[in-house]
Length: 173
Image (tube, rainbow, N blue to C red):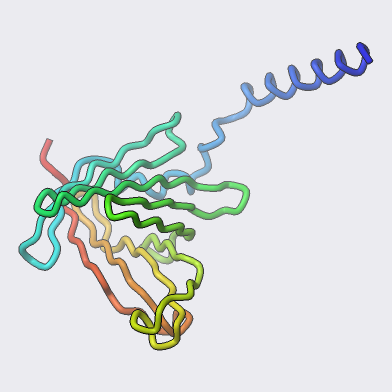
């Protein structure tokens, strides 16, 4: 038994050493696709409503953390996004001060970053089919601005309705 335990210890030690010598687990080029979002932002929606968003990389640069705030309604939301190199997709979790939880996956489609939920069963008052897919689309991306849309589809993604459009403008440093 001691020999087996010693053998397991040696294998574990070698694997830890090998991990330290390899490149960072978040160094894939795709893991930088959300870097445009890093920073402090002024937000505008419905032409007159305003909020802020502070987005940063945490956990050794592997996780993008969003800190959304609408001071007019005291609405706060946070998301955590990671690039899963095993599945070659982005995965994002959103939670907010109204008890919402959204689980999204996706990646770059052309010049836009698109994250989509799985199809969910919802009340017929929300969707005539009783099913809905949601997605978040980051588009028109420049260093100083981009547009974000929260969209939904009740026909399995054939058509999309914009539920919330936010214009992002980078804050001056």
